[in-house]
Image (cartoon, rainbow, N blue to C red; front, side, top):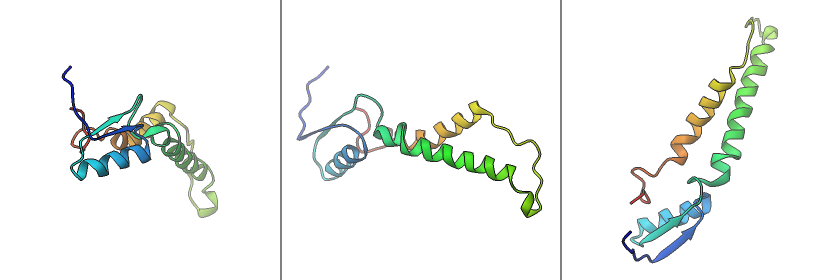
Length: 107
């Protein structure tokens, strides 16, 4: 692997690290961004965003089961867990996979 020269080394591609690296790169600074897991960090990939998506889905299920007071009748609302998780991944993947076309895309 060829040796590269950088002006800035950012460790961690969570919200702060990726913002700092992106801002520096947009200002012409040669940036190396080091992340052991996924760009976006814990909040985006495992914490905040997936949790909020699951809470939203749970709310939809709850409301679908309690709509009679509004004159609606939804029979047999059920959960398809693989489809739920596919939706969660569909929500977070475009956010965490911004390497392509991103100022800090893989080189």
